[in-house]
Each structure stands twice: as structure tokens, then as C-alpha cells.
Length: 442
Image: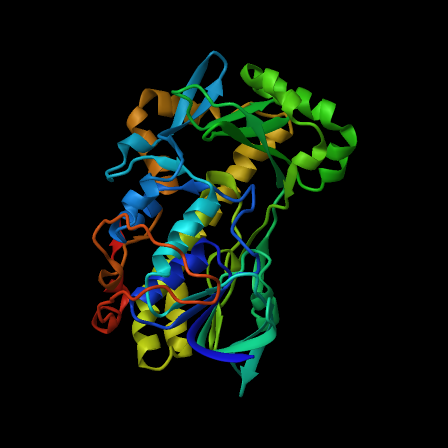
């Protein structure tokens, strides 16, 4: 089966769904391929930062988002003996939602899919996996894929690779990637029960171990951080030893560790930090983790991917309406989004080197003492890390043509492969001739 579309998006994660929604609201014909049958996959990044919350409000989706089950974090605090030091205080941010919302990613993706299906030019094909790129005269013109109806191909003016840190399309494109050395990995698991009401996002450190606890609705999500390459050793020690590690780092939750029955419930994440040199070739653009894999430090990966999607839609909606973006127009997306990417990755690598690795080596039990002393003496400084985590450098606003009034419609989502009921979109062409199409936040 062969079909045609204007923009083919491979990957139905946050970057792919946001890009699909925004381009569809611009009147661009969009097809999204998602290889899974649904969005229900655990231990995905579930932090929605203030920059993304602001975007949802601008898209008219804030009230729908508020209806989702969620917990909220307004600060990051590091326990230091009997006292804790606040590292980032989101309450100091000048934004309407000064907190991080913890929401299952599948709920967020369902919300975005429902909103996108309201646009007549949007198609979402679940359980459909891209297998090859289509090339014509040295240009990418779409992709081949496998799905419930068998093999097929979709031809497009632009193929957008949003298929994550192990991007198949990136590998098939031959684009060069720069990898940075990373000495840590993460192991994700959950513990039952809620956190205390005033619980902050709380890293725990001690005796060569490091752990971060995220309060969720009805349970705790936990990231255990260790040296890279030690997954086999950790599993060989067994679940009993792992429970003891958790209890020593967080004694107040020790009575919950019996809920971990085996190491199969502990999911290993191979932490990578890398970045494509060019993000595009003619007819293909990579964004989000496909363009730059991030460390889980700060939980900013999803939100940076969303910002990439907004920037790409702002710059490319007009060219897509007019016949397709040129390589020079695709290159502008990287120029627009490179600075925030470099800033985040540089900060993450500094945190790895100066905080996380020394803790794992047993050389430190927390942040450097001069930093702790400075933050305790001048609490207003906690706004700086809060801004870098919560808003980021050059956070994107929704382009004018994507904005809608707040509403909570009851919409039955169409089945895979079908477009939703009709909607309207303003002409984006006039607002997308330059970087001003989506204004930046200082």
C-alpha cells in the first residue's frame, strides 16, 4: 500500500505528537507512525516542566491537562544531615505554573492525540513501524513501514524523525553523531504508597550510592544511579541487597521495599549524551532525542524535545504549505535549537563530573560545600537552577496559528489511521518567515 502526505512523522512520543498537532493546526497534512499499539509503557519520562505547561495553556489544552491525575513538585531539595538545602525553587519563577507536574506520559500523549484528531489534516497510525527510508535522487521522500495491514510506504515532502535516542531513521540517514563520555547509568523502579504532602523532589546520597525519588499519585517513582557497566553486577547481588541499598538511602520508605519482588521490576536505562552534527539531510529532519540524547539528570529531555517540536513547526509550517522545505530551511531548525541543547548537555556533564560521580566514588555525600553555603545564605539564587530546569534557554511559545481558546470537549478518538473531526487553522505563512515565528522566552 502506498500513500502520500505532506509531513511524515516517525515516532509518536512527545516530540512527534506535539509536532503533529501544531502542523495539523496550520493546515498541513500530517501522518504520524507509532510502532506500538498504544502509549502504555512504564518508566518513561513523566515530568512536565513549567515551559511545557505554559505551552499547553497557549494551545488551549491547560484545562484538559489539569483533569489528568498528577502530582506537583515546586522545589528540589537535597538532604544534608538533619537539614536539607533547596537547590531549585520553582515558586520563584515568573510563570503562571511554577511547578513540575508528574503525569504518566501515556496520559499526556493521549491528550495530544485527542487534540490532534480534531484537525482534519491529522492521521495517526498506531502499531506501524518504519523500516526503511525512501530515497529519490539523493533526497528522502518518505519511508517504508510495517503495520496491521502489512507492508506499505508513505511518500512525503518532509520526513520528521522523532523516533528517540535509538533512532532508526537517524542511523539509516548516515548523519554524523558526536557522542560524549558518560560514566553513569540509571535503574528505574516504583514503591507503593504516597509521599508526605510537603515532599520535594529529593535526591538521596550516601556510601557510594545515589537515588532520586519522585512522588506520584499513589506510588513513588525512583531512579537509582550507579556506575555505567554495572547492571550485571547489580543484578547478581540480588533483590535483597538492592532493598537494603534503598532502605539505607531512604529509611522513611524502608517498610515499602518488600514490594520489590525481583530485579525484573528494576528497569535499566543505558544513559547516553550525544548530538547530531547536522540534524538534517534533504527531505529529513531529526528532532528531540533522535537529534540529541540527554542524560536523565534534571528530567529535561522530554521538555527539550517538545521545544524542538514547537520550533520546527514554527519555522516549517509555511514552507510545507508552499511545497516543502529546502535544506537551508531545515538547517534553520538546528540553528534555532542548538544553543538550548548545548547548554543543557554541558550542564548535565558538569553535574555528572562534579556531583554524581564523586558521590558514587564515595568522595562526596552531596553538592559541593561552597554551593550549599551560597544557596543557604542567598535563597534567591535557587531561582537560577529552577529557571534552567523549569524554563530553559530559549523556551518556545506556541505560534499564533496554533493557539486555541481553553476548552474541555468530550471527543471520542477515531481509530488508528483516520483523521479526526474538522477544525480550523489560521494561515501561518506570514508568521513563519523567520525566527520570530515562535517568540523566545528570556
